[in-house]
Length: 131
Image (cartoon, rainbow, N blue to C red; front, side, top):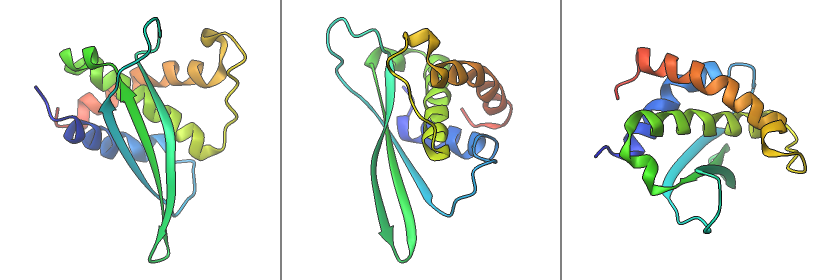
């Protein structure tokens, strides 16, 4: 079994410069990930959300959480892909994107972009990361 926080931190460290290169901000991002129980029949494997903003010594810290089904811990490669996908959603939130949940899931622009980028981010991470 791998350490969730170590893997998430390493992925974020490797892909963040590429993923967030167009976003000019002085805020610090804090990403946490944890297993959660999903409602029966929920098709989602994971989701990402904004948690909080805090100011400390003049620095702005924004916290995001990624929750996922426990079954994703069975395969490190699947887990890493999911984290890459959810980090795209963090980037979209930081970029100020609007999320349109009224569209069918497969037609939501934020999901299309996340699926488009997850393979590339995973490739970049696998070349440079520790896990």
